[in-house]
Amino acid sequence: MKNSSSVARKSTSVLRDRIRQSREMLGLSRAELAREVGVVASAAAQREQSEGTTPSLENLAAIAQVTEVSFDWLATGRGYARFRGGHEDLAIHPDSLAMDPFEEEMLALVRKMPQSHRYPFLTYLKAVYPGKR
Image (cartoon, rainbow, N blue to C red; front, side, top):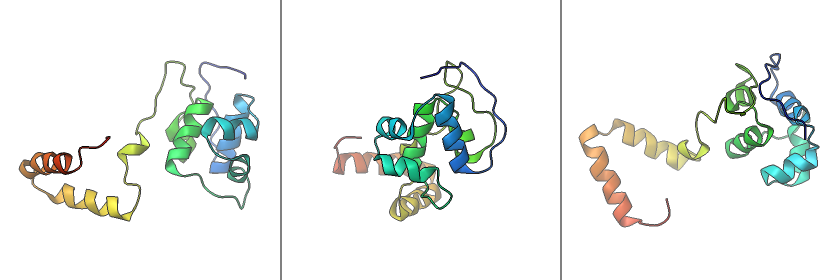
């Protein structure tokens, strides 16, 4: 793999092009990227096709980490495709975001909840489900 410490890339407005560009900056093949991200090779190939599928937020974050580019740049095309060499980590971890409509609704309800009720509610949930967090 090639390695650079910091690279400012031209603005690429299409996600598939940013994925390809970030993969190529490290000299990774699609199959290598797929293996590193933990998806099948055909999924990695689809990400770069004009009619291909869009990666999940979790996979997009993994692609950013594997290819050592800024998550913000990869996801939106804004900013710089800076490599992680001590410069930048993910701004938001995928586990911090709602992953389905149920979680979105729960988040909306918690945001409406008075601050004084939030921690007792969280304590209750932890008591009911003490499993892995």
